[in-house]
Image (tube, rainbow, N blue to C red; front, side):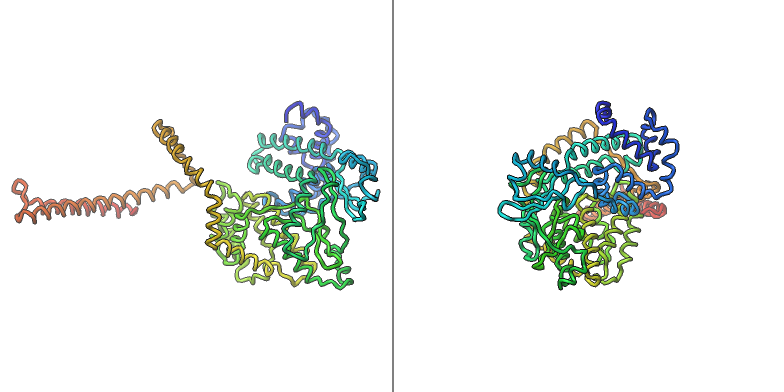
Length: 561
């Protein structure tokens, strides 16, 4: 972070550094070289000592809650990254509270007028002054359109964008400083992680994107008649205001209400699961936060999804690799699981492959001969994420969102019907994915779709070869090998064996050619071949045989054949 930015955000900068110290993370402040010159003597005197009595996960959660909306939302987003953070911290981050006091209705009026150039009375027949929900980024008000349609209007908090941008700027600077000074920060690429979380948070600030997400869900869900997506009113929506159809129903965690209204919880569980699996494995576009508050059972028995600020996307390749992981797990294939993990994530070059294989074997054995219907998908995802964290395997953000969505789905479904198996519901989708992967026509279409890319690659080949030959003539091509301890000696032994076998083959071939030539020449002349009256064939055969036997003896004696 440069000096100008540090001065501009000095007050907020001090609040953040002070909170680090107060919650027992003063050692980070010291390691970053931020302790000197900061007026925190009263804090350094011991206020942070009480924090040490609590677990690190609890201290992180309290730290984030104190620093406000940006940090709370970042913590909630980070709670999806079980591949980067240990389980105990993930558990605490999942408990972060997003409830904050509502802002005034006069501010609501002001924002609406700025966005649409008209008053609340001109746009709506009525609007409740009291919000029906309030969160760190915005709040929701009930309203009625001029035609009598009930709508929910979400309004972004005043000045929240500027505050979040300030916090992200400060955090990006701290992460860059950490990577310069701390080995663990470089190893975990905290700047990259911060950029990823910041991008996700900025996406949530854009209500126009949420409107687009809702419209896309409505289009993709048209094949499921029991799924309802609230309509978006584009003429009353903008980057800071989102107006959607108001839906009333029973939340999925209100099980007593479902029972009183005679609604089958098993049917709700089945529809909710099918909808989520369809989004993930068919559409490749899924609701990333399907907790009970974001889904309603409507009076007609339809299932409605709400809040489309956090969504996940799966490319066709990612869907295939995820299916490969599930299939390999079911087929008890260690190699298949490792291949799927390699394709799903990024295994570091310095990863301990032997240890990784051992951990995968252990994971595989946990599901040995376990009926597919009895496998907990949440448990399998947690174990996969723990394995990724242990071996520093970086899994793409959308796949971690997928893991969290599946775990949340299983939790909701288990509460509705403890006997319902997500894996049973997922099996037909899995079979369809496998069939698609093996379908020759689909493979041809994929190849045809990538044909322009292949053509570009081929057109680049001559130029690349010229560059390579130029470097070779200039002697600038270098070969660098990095081998673990003990591997070099094993490699040299293998090279010895290859060389010895090659020598053996060459001598044998030479001997055979020489003898064949002498014998053929002798036969064609119908006389004994004499060189200076010496029996050349006999002597040549004897000498070559002795040399051949000596070479064979030497190779076998070295033990490197």
